[in-house]
Picture 1 (cartoon, rainbow, N blue to C red):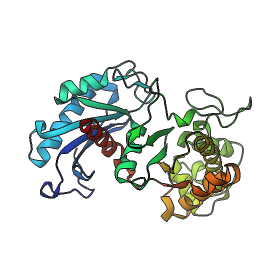
Picture 2: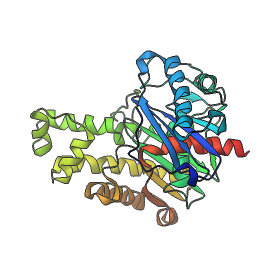
Picture 3: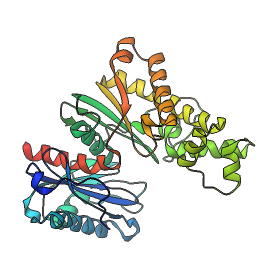
Length: 343
């Protein structure tokens, strides 16, 4: 299933060479062909079908790279490099996806080399959130900064660290697992889906937001959000955001509490890494700065940072939303391939 809803750059206007980026998610795979300036010239997406197994998916990702070339009338060999971002944990050195919670049964699969075999190119491999961070650094909200961190808010909390055009992956490919920094050390702290107690993912992910809302409703909370759920609507961050925009006190409180915990986590990252900018992306950004709920969310994050960080850091670190949306991962994967080729 191809989609052309986004604005695509005509090949005649592209700055060569071209790079392909593949962003593997639990639900969908996104692939983009971008030019040397990070502009998309072709795009293709299709369901992951993770239940068919990793080899089937690797083969289809390989065909997607060929499809990108076909869409613009070039040979696959004309693509200068291919990048891949997948959920972690991973061993980026060996190209192995070690364990992916949203891809059951994929443990210890050599995904980089299998994609390379199917697409006919060497593949640059990255964590999906790191790829998104690089996309934002290259052509998104971070393009004016030499260093940044990106936190992606979705089912979990992911992240990426970019310093001086380099992604920081760590000795064990586990750098920027921001969702698992500890923000609440108490014995009664909430647990994330991995069973870790007190980490950021347990408080500021979509999973955590839904869990806290469900608990409040089960305990008898009233208001529009509770009424909607009791009437049969599915409890999602979109529903919570909608009711917060409509003035529901519980929905607004839940969102601002998630922002408070996010701010606490960001302070730790700022004191550790001292980036020029902190970007917030992923599916759970509540409409961004242009929406009342999104604006309130990021202002609450900034307020927490102001209250807790060293004054110089609080004053000079930019905190803003990411701008590439769902294209960040595929653009960033292509950008990392470009960087690898340039070396």
